[in-house]
Amino acid sequence: MRAHEAGAMHGDIGDRGPGWLRPPADVNALVPQLWPRQVERGANGALTVAGLDVRELAAGYGTPAYVLDEDDLRSRARDFRAAFPDADVYYAGKAFLCRAVVRMIAEEGLHLDVCSGGELATALSAGMPAERIGFHGNNKSVAELTRALDAGVGRIILDSFTEIDRLTALARERGVRPGVLIRVTVGVEAHTHEFIATAHEDQKFGFSLAGGAAAAAAFTVIDEGVLDLRGLHSHIGSQIFDTSGFEVSARRVLALQAQIRDARGVELPELDLGGGFGIAYTTQDDPATPDELAKRLRKIVDSECAAENLAVPHLSIEPGRAIVGPAVFTLYTVGTVKDVDGLRTYVSVDGGMSDNIRTALYDASYSATLANRASTAEPMLARVVGKHCEAGDIVVKDEFLPADVQPGDLVAVPGTGAYCRSMASNYNHVPRPPVVAVRDGRARLIVRRETEEDLLALDVG
Image (cartoon, rainbow, N blue to C red; front, side, top):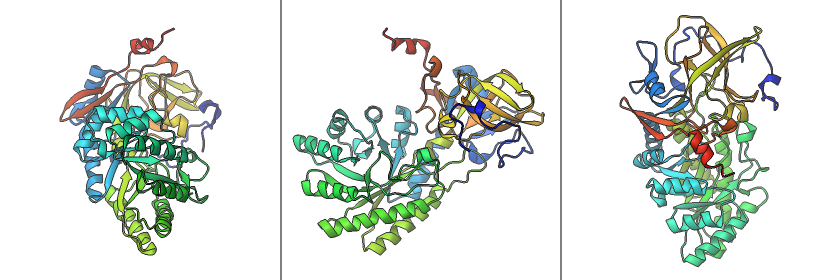
């Protein structure tokens, strides 16, 4: 059910929760697929990450805070690299990017996908080799394209005829021949929330396949001869569990490759199928492993290439959420617990929609657990909400927490590595939380907490 645009207070109320959510046999138990691989509940009842007690993290860095299990992120990057050994695995930086994560990704042998000048600047400042960067975006400025050319970015993904003209002029001026891909809108609506399905026709990204714009774009680039057209790109959405959408997308994109070959005698050597691979936010989610994804996608590409009599192109994929999402949880402190006339219990924490907008924006579901102790109390269906002046400021819509949860307790919400810090805001002038990386029992700050001084420094009035 979609959230009411006026906020949660206008939605359904009651204490039953969604049909898939069941009272746990043990309210202290962790569901492994929801948490970073090194998160456990210690003998004293508190959560630990890579051997470090979350109470120490809260004392040292404050709350709310994003906590990154560094070895978990690295292992997920390696899992994709091992599953796709002959492909280029681009980490989708929009999920979460900072210089420390860029270095982790580079050290694990991945490429990096950026989609703004700021993301490109972060990647370059952290030492990511420019030839391993792909540059996305539907409205890249002249300054952004110029910087990409001057840095030697490996792939620029073309998104409009204006951009083709713009990049062609800049490349001709500089005497360079950048590698480019054409983003194709294939008309596939992935089985996902309508706000994050990006391949149907009525949206801002790419060149329409059905209308002939994608073919025309390819012919334009080939005929001009300035840009090095390496292949086609397709991205069908986000938080996808069903690979059937990729099958339809690959079939249509490879049919266009065959059309280009037949019309211009050019067989493009690369194919980028994008990303959007889903992760588990709650017990109702069942994501595929990288090995399973690799087998399914390779079978799809091999089959469609055989049907079109095409050589199998060099494959690229773009996982972001699937690498960083499960590697992070957000740690909060409870401020108030309020029972509203027996209808619902609201557990208010010291963050909210400024550090996780996805519940309000996408009607996303999350899980949560009491983090600073174990409890012998009965499970209580609760709603974890934030501190902002907004009825729709919800972090976790429905979750069973111990009935004795109280002010001062710590609550941890898993699966917050993707699109939480990167979409964070200063709503109500709340400073954004820090990102703390933990490895081998040691914590280090990789993005510091914003301060009120930071907010005031931008206010020149």
